[in-house]
Every structure is written in C-alpha cells, then in structure tokens.
Amino acid sequence: MADVKVERKESISREDAVRWLSQLSAAFADGHDAELPFTPATVSIDIPDRVRAELEVEVEGNEVELEIEFKWRITDPAGTQPQTPPPPAVTTKKRAASRK
Image (cartoon, rainbow, N blue to C red; front, top):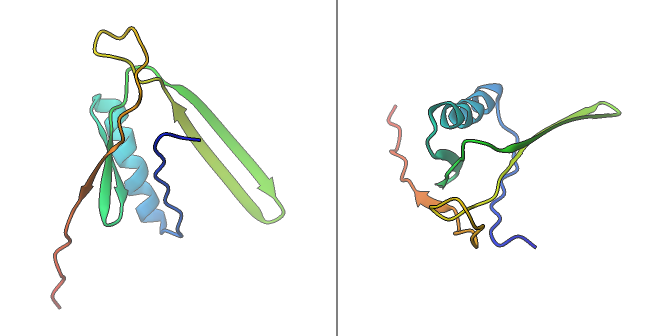
C-alpha cells in the first residue's frame, strides 16, 4: 500500500489534456517542481534529473488506453539514502467567479 496516493479520474477535453501534459513537460524540461491540477487544489512534486519511464498502449475492443508512468526514489539532500517520502504538497486555490 502506498504511503501517499492522490488520484484523479475524469473525462477531459483535448485542450485540458494538453495543459496537463504541458505543465508536466515544462517541469521536466526546466528542472523544477511539477504543479499538477487536483481540483480544487494542486499537487507539487519534485522531479529529479533521472527517472524510470514506462509507456504502455493497450487496445481492447473499441477502447484505447495510453499510460505514461514515471518512477523515482526519494533521497536525502546528500543523495545517498532513500527516505520515507513526504506527502505531496497540496495547495488549495480559489477560483475567481466569472462574470458575464
């Protein structure tokens, strides 16, 4: 069982999928924390320089499943010993009401 697990499942638009992937891609490219949307909050995850990656495509009937998985160990500041992972930082953001 995971020490911490945050999961989000929903139907989203292609534009929302692009936004999620762009945020994650920018974090990998720029070497900063990934800020992932978990409405009404965000989860911040520190991404190291090297990760294990898995890409899986499964077609079953008329449904396609694409999974992209990144995995890494959490180490101490000296980079020597795995530590008990801290929970991901969750930040609640209030959304401004839209006016028409």
